[in-house]
Amino acid sequence: MSDITPSLNRFHGGKVFDTARKLNVPPEEIVDFSASINPLGPPPGLKEYLFERFERVVHYPEIGAGSLARAFEDRWGLAEGSVLVGNGSTSFIYLLPAALGPGPQRIAAPAFGEYENAGLLAGCPIEYVTPDTGPPWSYSASTLLETIRPGARTVWIANPANPTGQLIPKDLLLEMARRVEGSDRFIILDEAFIEFASEHSLVVEAPRFRNLMVLRSLTKMYALPGLRLGWMVAHPDRIRELGPRLEPWAVNVLAHEAGFYCLGQDAYVRETNALIERERKALLEEFETMDSVTAYPSAANYLLVRIERPDWDAPRLADTLALRKLLIRDCSSFRNVGGRFFRMAVRTRDQNRLLMDALKELL
Image (cartoon, rainbow, N blue to C red; front, top):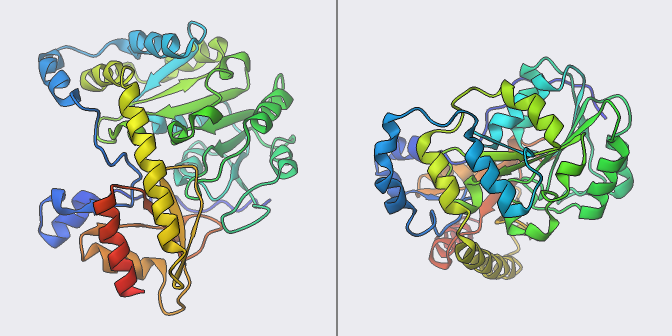
C-alpha cells in the first residue's frame, strides 16, 4: 500500500471533438478506439423515440427520476427503493466519498482515474493496492480480501477492470461484501462494463448488503455517453440516505426517456455481445501474429496492448494515429501501467481493420 496523494488526474479517452477541431475535419470522420463504446451505436429506433418526446424538454425533469428507478428495480427483480438514478455513474463516484464520510479511499489500481479524483476532492487520503501479477495486472483472492481490512473507509473495485478487462470472481466479491457488513467500511463496485460479462454482476445481490454499492452505466453498452445516464444499486436504507444528496434534477428529460427505451433492448444487447465476442477473438488472433505488440485477453469490449518495440511508446503512437483520425487510449496515466501500454475498443470488422493496418505499418 502507498499513502501517496497525487494531483488531480483528468486524462480520458473519447476526445473526438478536440481531435476533429485540431485536424479541421468533421467529428464523424474520427474513428474512436479510445472510448470503449458500443460500435453499433445507440439502439435502433431510439432517435425517433426521443424526437417524438422532444417537446417534453419544456418541463422540468422528474425530481429523483423515481419512475425510472422503479423500472430498473422491476427489470432486475430488486427490492423497492434499492435503485438511485443519476447523471451518469460518475455522478455517484463523486457523491459517495463525500456522503460516506471522511477516511482513506483504497483503490485497486490500475483503475478509472475519477475514483482518485473524487476522493481527493472530498479530502480523503488515497491508498493504492498493488496487483499480484502484471501485466495484465490481476489480484489474488488474498490480496483483495486484504483490501477490506480496517483502516480504509471505502474500497473501490471495478469489474471488469479498466483498462485491463480482467474479471474478479463473483463469489469472491460476495465474500468481501459479507466481511464488511456491519463495519465502518464500504465497497463501491463499478460495473460500467459488466453488460459484456453480465453473469458476473452483483446487481441482484447488492440490496442485501448495507455496506456495498454497485454502480451501473448506460454509456458503454447503449452508446450514450453524450446523454449521461447511470444508476446505483444498494440497500434501501442506504438509498434513502444518499438520494437527498443528489441534485434535484440530476437526470434530464431525454436521458430519462432513453432509460426506459433501453430497458427493452434485449435483442440489441445480444447482437452487441455476439459482435464483441467475435471481433475480440479475431483481434487477439491477429495480434498473436505480430512481434511488435502483445495483446491481453479481456472480458470487456476493449483490449489492453503492450508495445514491444523500444523505439515507440504509447503517447507517441496515440499522437501519430490521431493524425490519421484514429484514436487509442494511451494508458500512461493509469497507475501501475506505464508508457508502453494502450487500450483499444473492440469495434466493427471494417473499423478494426483500419487500426490494425495502421499498427502494422507503424510498428
